[in-house]
Length: 449
Image (cartoon, rainbow, N blue to C red):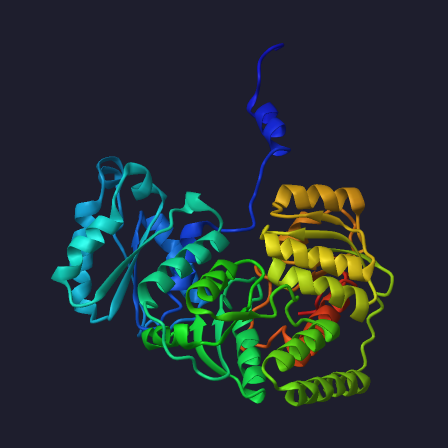
């Protein structure tokens, strides 16, 4: 009938304007950051559904469930309508049985919308418990998970780093190693620590991954800081520079993925830390190892001059541009980043100018934008995640290299993307995905058994 709208019509009308974000909310990012403090308790003032995000953050940090505790007020209809401050106070009291030194109280959307004042509740409860209680107002509507990381870092620094300590010579504070989509990011962190050790630097704190509360006492004593993410952590570095004179290293430099980025990153560290000889040794030995290993194993992939799309977070996506262009000799035609930090944009634009590239760039992309552009451009290959693998179905794109989370690969051992072993790891992943692209999707024979 004319003028009647069916359910099918509505689905068709809304399909083209659906936005499916890559990122989780600020609540998740804050949980991810707080859980990085070993032996703490993270109390989610939220419904049970939001509590699942805390569990997911627990897994991302690979924390030990026998050391770190997670709790939830499990707000139901009554608390969402009338407020849950009484329930929060009771849950904080119950946390006394856990014997933890500190409890972080994280507020989700519901309680913040209804007006629960977690700061006041925590202030009231401090005299009734024998542990620190720190509120973090991080409702999901405050932004993406990267905004949540910055919110939590700001609260942690202002509450746990209170005085200026005497500077420790050649000391470094590492910031936001967890704020990226490398599924084995802990190996990247280990590589950075190893490189700094070989240059004579001492890591006094990592904000945050398996960070002891005592490490916060040394944060103000750090001479330098390094932000290990292009997606979050810059605000924390700026705060440390302003309040405690902590100089940020490698600001504006892509993270060390690929030959040129690794060489440039290590060289800059060597100059600043007065360890140029050590940096040169790391570069010489690393590049020799990659070349010799590649020569022995052989790299039969043929990707030269193929057009490609890079869909990733800024942390992995920006250094991939040079790696793909110089090391694989491919041509990036699409660079879609899931975040939109100002400094990250400046780094990317500088890289593109140096490489004389002019791809289509989109910051803070979503699946709809990605799918539409892939359909328009139809690159030969995609560097991305399992999301792009499904988004590209039916578009006749031959090569899809899954490098970032969410990924369709289980990994028991962490192997880095940073540095020279990282180059080999990336080449291995690309080689396997390249081989899979030629595997028949149809069953061509019947098994005899």
